[in-house]
Length: 584
Image 1 (cartoon, rainbow, N blue to C red):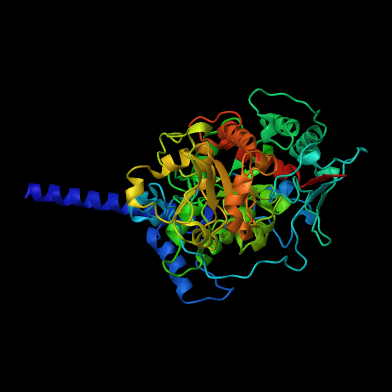
Image 2 (cartoon, rainbow, N blue to C red; image 1 turned 60 degrees about the horizontal axis):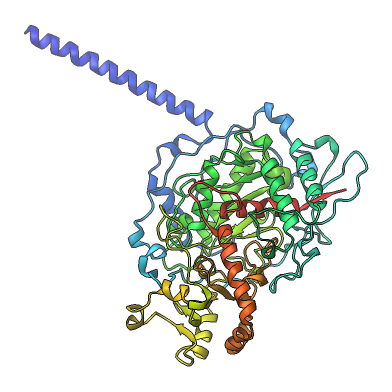
């Protein structure tokens, strides 16, 4: 009997304790719904429900007004944010500034990325002759400037009289590369440009630093010497050296912590889209350029992966990137409401880095993201009205086979042992490659042009060995204008032959591509052999030596080194940002 009484008392105590825990948990959840940027329903939602809703709604609607489920709106702004509000002229269609300037990370609510073995983008079938890519999207008309909306150019009026800041022109001493109509474009100016005008009252220290850097670069003396730079590779090596020095001394970058994993802050270091992953990883690990205080930043990095967006938000066989575009639109709207930084320049000092073919298309649904933010993308096609030459950055597409050893296998044979005139092997996608094969496959022993490298040939000489043994490596566009073969050719010390009209070559603001590559118009494919044979042995030897000297600027290093690919990409973003600023 006594044992029963003790048991009953114990159960009663446990019941009271459980009830107390339940009450505390409920109170905490209720408090979170008011004090956090997200409601209770978000914190307890199933991880797959949001992803499913983003995919499924697309199947039921095709209008431009399509609105997919998004996160609950942020809480109302705090009065303490008033001093941070920009002047009315700096914000367009923004009535209030919402949220807190203190960054908070969004919890992960997406499943882990799919196995690389099951994902066509990362299949190892590339093993020499393939670069599997997604089929093209539904045809969409080329974009034209929206009425009354133009790219932002930041116009600053100093309180003291200064001479106008000249536009930096890398072509002052050398001719531009073949595909560069304007070697270093002037700051974006249009008749209806919506300029952001800031009086000296609203000047920030970061603005003054950028103006100082621009003047220093424009006044760089000629003949600057750096043993780590091979002058013939550059349009103007003195300007590049001074700009790089200014970047090292001044540039600070703030990285938004917001965004769910794996869409954000989850770099992939292997495959043909590895460039965006390597940049993300090295940028987030960097201590020289990255700052925790956004008020000290000159640039703001939105650290998402275009590859992960496609893997998690794309509806199979739908041939539309609309769910990805809507997700990015909602993300930009969120950070522009939560923080004051986007609205100061309407996104002109923000940048993204994406190497998936669709990275440019996913910016379509947010005008400021598409027209103002700096897009560092592999698909640098100027014909589609999205990539803006002089503002956006052409990101080199690097195919990394061994993420732990990204430089494995680089190098090639000397000129005397390169017995093949020209080589190409790859999938027949896009408009250019079928034309290339129709004219040259099996017709000339000097022109080794294949679709899939035949097994009887591959068993004697691999794809990589073909590149290392060829004088010229043909790099035709695929579905899009970009191709990893350009960087592969550089890795294997083979002179790249680029065939892709409307493609902006990587780092065209600083590099003289005519010194180490051949650019052939698509219409001249039938003349390809004559064009290559027209290059004398002496000129070819110089070009091939320049390719070897260029190699360091296209290499990923586990620990970044001066002038390597990480720094070259960051410099292009920095330089294009400087060229948008007008000093009056």
